[in-house]
Image (tube, rainbow, N blue to C red; front, top):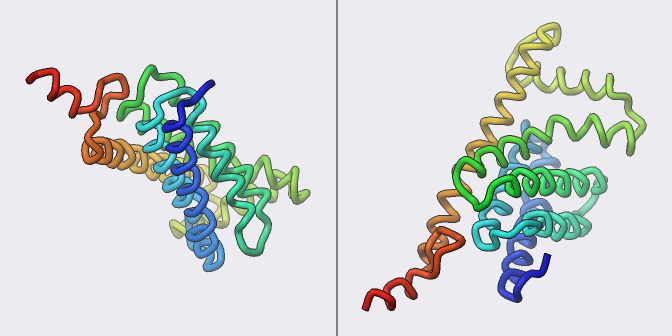
Length: 211
């Protein structure tokens, strides 16, 4: 995929924004062990990436945004960063795959992208923990049940209910991120004097044609 100079700049800007969110807010959330910090970070990062997609509505652009954010994660202070770096790349890859299924960005695409991207947060530990830290999938499962139990106040014996709640919650957070990303992207396009449709000319050009 060949990007124009303006598109490369836009990809770099949104990738940097996502990376800065991971470096700053991510460090704070992880340090204080805020519940659902992974889902919140994923939602914000995906929002940035999806807004970027409205500016560069081309296949591959969202993945490039994620790669830039992933590389910036190297500058995070303390802790293990390989796991979060893989998570950022995976979330960007999920977003890229979903958005590429649609001809151009629209709200339904963003809702689905946000939902599946944030849902990855639940799946991610089952892949990275055994590979990077030698923890078995069963231990990861027990940790998931324990965190869910503390979050909603159910006993860990109610495994199915806890899992369904966590899945629904992550999907809802992701959908909210997609909804907001669509609205914010639309407003940014309007403020910058562009129509929101990626195939339409800027508003200023439309006005000139009607004169």
